Length: 116
Image (cartoon, rainbow, N blue to C red; front, side, top):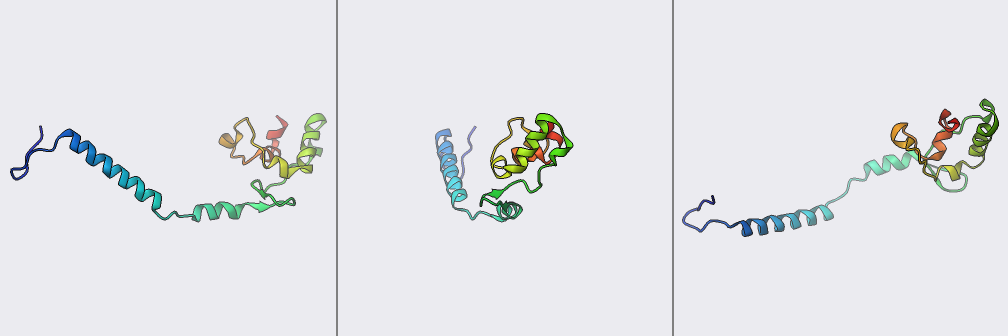
């Protein structure tokens, strides 16, 4: 039930909806033009280091030594040492970024995860 204010007619649901829409548009416009704090992005970029090929490295740890493993596993770790810039640009599809905190496919070879 709408109430009257000082003898004026009550506000209808259409007017309320219109006021809410205008408020929403103004809020979205304000958020679009509000200054953005980039300090988190700056901290993230400081953790990246350029690689020998000029790409920014996400993974800062080197791959483990292939001498710790045998067969195809040792070969995989050797390749990780030979092409770290490429592996650092690839996504690992086992979702280890969510469960182990890995940053790229290269991260799998900085611990024993790549052996599995």
